[in-house]
Length: 208
Image (cartoon, rainbow, N blue to C red; front, side, top):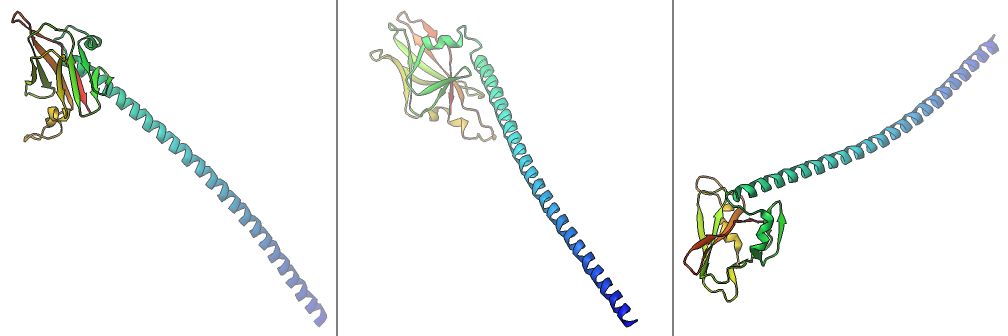
């Protein structure tokens, strides 16, 4: 009787141990599968993050290109507006003026890229005098005389070692809190030998 009871207890213990072993093995498998799944998900998330970053970069570039295009269109329109009473096309200006300063032509504007500025009016060899004028755009200031050249020996030239001073108001707000963009036009009034005067087409300048 006692032996039977002992055997029964031993069998129960063996079954319990066997069941626990099976549970442990099953838990280990589930744990390993879970770790693998987490690793796969982390890898997938990393890929998605990279795709999102690439998409954000594309959106940023597209927005930047759009903004640059809109700015160019606005600049072209503004250039045409600044020269609305001139009969010459923009590309004809290179036959009338020579800019002896580092610059680029962007969206129908001569973009000046350094402080030192020299502008030469071509032709009018027999003239008596050339007056160079500046007109700040987006301003009610009106035309302002920059320089009068009465000596043609070295050509009709306007020189300024600090062109930024010409458009000082573009960087300093007025008392009313208004500031202007760096756009202005330069033109010349030529006094001919017979005393008559001629106005030259406006040269659109953008100073960065």
